[in-house]
Image (cartoon, rainbow, N blue to C red; front, side, top):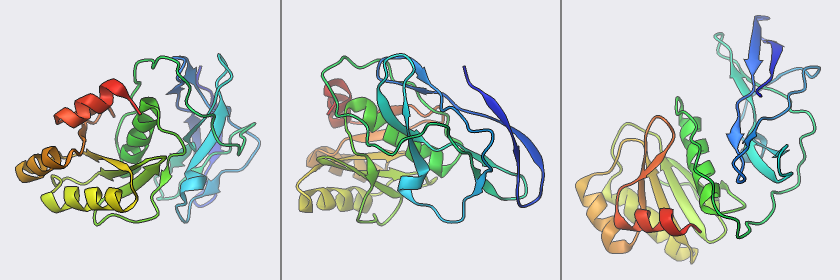
Length: 225
C-alpha cells in the first residue's frame, strides 16, 4: 500500500501531503518506496541520472531494482526530492530466466515521465544497467543499457528520418542494438527507413504503455532482451 508523508516546501513554506507511487516488480508485486518522513525534502537544482533513481527491495520476493526517485512539484515552481528510507546504492541484480509479468505502465504527464516509462519498459524486456547515454542525440533523450542504445522523444513533433538514422549510426559505432520511443509517432519516411535498417519503433501513449509501430518492435516485445 502506498504511504503518505507531510512535506513542507523550503522555498515557499507551503504544506503538502505526498503519496509514494507504486511500480511493478518482475514478480508482479507492486513495489512502493518507503518514505523517510523525518528527512527534509531536497530541492532539485540540477538533473543527474544517478540521482533520479533509487534502488529499493521488493517486499514480496526480495529482488532489488532501480525505480524513479520520488519527487513532488510545488505550485511555487520548486521540485522537491523526497527521501527514501532504507534505499541502497547497490546495482540491481542481473536478469534471470524468470517469465515476464505483464508490463505495468506509469502515466505520462511530463517529459521525465516519458523517459521513466521507456526505462521501465526496457527493464521489463530484460535490459539491465539502464542509464543516460554518454552521447546526446540530436533530439530527445538518450538511454543506454548493455548492448543497446535507445532514444526517447517526448516532443509533440513526429520523429523524422534523420532522427532514426542518427540513432542507427550511434548504435553502429557502439556495436549495439537500438530502439526508438516517440510520444508523437513517426513521419512516414522515418518508418520506412526504420524498417530497412531494422530499428524497432514504439509509440508512447499517455498511459505509459509503449506500442510497437513496426515488425522489429513486435519481435522485440515478444522475445525480450
